[in-house]
Length: 336
Image (tube, rainbow, N blue to C red):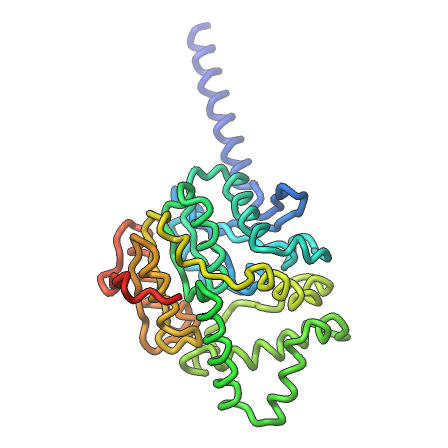
């Protein structure tokens, strides 16, 4: 009888473990997070492991598909969480411009942390996503473990204006007057709202702009991301989302707020990026425990322009060390 009870116990434990494993395997790798104001954010989890990395895409207005395919190597040994920011991709459509603000974006990132029960987050912010994680870290310095600023947007309005000017200089060098005149209306939110096919408008403008964001046109053949995904009605509002969020920043200067962020920070910048090098120097000098890695022969997208250098540096940093090539930027070089 005793032997029977023991065997029954072990059998029940085995069956419970098998059932748990089966449930774990069937657990969804995507779903929705509901924010404090009732907006549903779509998320997707790639990979598995003891580590968790939260990846925040650029824009504003793009979806997680803009970076996920090209960052897939990061999921080799860890869980990587991506999410569509409010009003983008498969997240809820937002028609109220008041709900598209940097304050709401910070709250949404906190909702991601809470949903996945993360005490602290290790964050990677790509382009605009870099500015967003900077705002989040300044607001919640005790809730960040490590930060990767991946080709980050500028931390001040002055530096952003310099970037905007450089984009137009490069467009004017690359395209003739007739082509420029065709491109200009594509930046207007009304063009997207009224277009019979907003996805075609999206592809046209991003194909043109991508050419001035990279070091070499040849590298664009390696780009796997999709900057024009998501439901058509959401895509129509892409430029409106972009407009409202950037408008909410006002005449911004995040640099003075960053001294409270004590977490280790790696800033990665392609030397040929349209964003000026001094912008990333400003990030690295304002953050107390930051290093700047400059990547030669790369523009805004080193994840596919110089993948060997990019992924090696990120892996080194996520394992607890700064890449040896990353340099400390003296505080005296801070730009405002």
